[in-house]
Image (cartoon, rainbow, N blue to C red; front, side, top):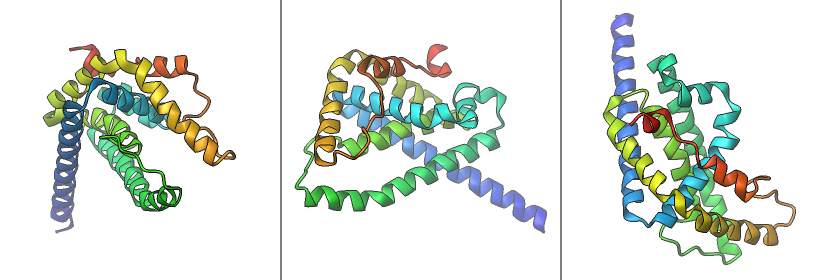
Length: 202
């Protein structure tokens, strides 16, 4: 009986992972298609910050991103669940941030807010890693990277726009560390030049 329960549990878990990955990929692709190239470049830039701060500092995450063929699908699935849990915690903390911004009378009128750009930047890596778990999202993930690559020429406009928000936050909270760390603009552009294996091999 336990063996049957284990099989059913694994199947349900697999189905949920695939469902979550398909939903995230579809949402990300929809946002990229509906917005202009500068907005896409800003999302690409935010994804580069997340990669530098999180993925590149973890051997397991880096392996899942760059050598998914050398990692079991179950391990990739667990990594996706880990990133999903991290993102869920970030979303829970958003209400506290919204209250602070409201108190400071800061309102963002962009079609895609800075917060959403951060989450979408994280989504890029979640679905890219996830494409090693299920082939059902492969074509859409490739399209995501095609749109991002097409927008990369707009980074010279996107990065200064992101810097403006960083300067505003620094003015309001001088003790706060820079939002994007110690990255120079040239380093940031260089980080944005990364392309995953599935895109290079198209």
